[in-house]
Image 1 (cartoon, rainbow, N blue to C red):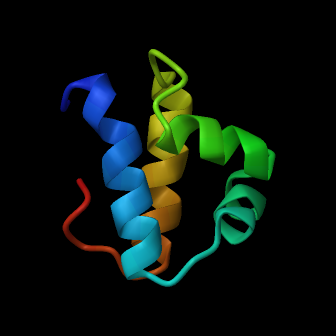
Image 2: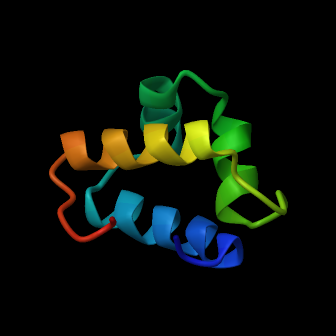
Image 3: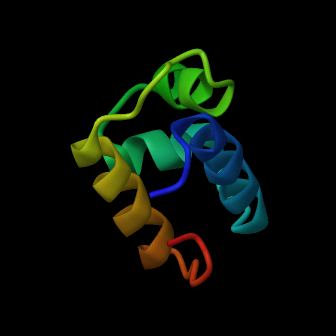
Length: 68
């Protein structure tokens, strides 16, 4: 798996490519919009494996093919 510090940046890039708002992604992940923001800004040092898998699944469901 990639370095955790780069995950937030990748999530943000893919979310924007897919034209999703933080609110839309948060709803899909069943987390708050502010938590998505914290992940993207890399305020969190790590993302738990469960969250990683959920983000990955959500982005793939919206058509992302290059994230994983």
